[in-house]
Image (cartoon, rainbow, N blue to C red; front, side, top):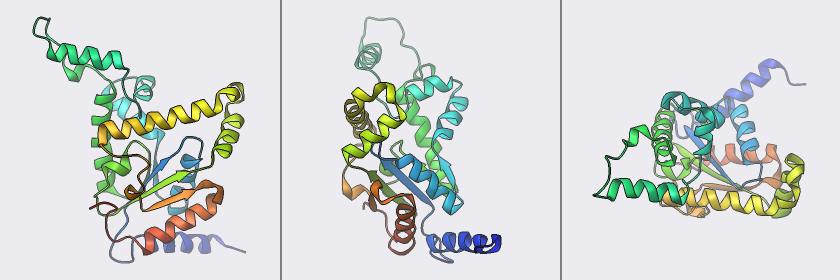
Length: 235
């Protein structure tokens, strides 16, 4: 039977292994995920196992507070591009000669502004270390950062549809459509703001099929980050 002391020793040994002993190697783990692959849930299990901070919904709340906007508005701009008519109007105001003075970018909170806050937020988080970051382009943003380990979580379509139907039974008929649309939106976000292909395997140290189960996924991540990584994913 495992005692509390055993549990504490195990947690300490995990942190020791993932830090490379006395010379810290991995300070941040990023998790990109297909919609419905349970990537966010895996990240929660990983953070709990390591005793690290999970950066997911708290990012939205803290940015909303810092920007002085509602959480709902921040959520609307989270991992999304602005509608085409918003981008068109913004380009018009900044490019037209015969117009009234354009509103300051600081007065407008949109996806562009959200990404600026996300960059600042994640830069600070990466410096602090000991955190697991879900999405938001963190893998692309920190692609060349030493001490960052990048994971991509995927799943077969039938498993993702099953997850969607269980969580959103009232929209079960649109399951596949919603899954594909969300992944396209995330890919477009990464491409526009970070100039990277979201599914490019070269961006990640580890790609996991969530059919493995959380325990196996977490252990594979700990093993990989603790023994294999000494260089950034991209040079």
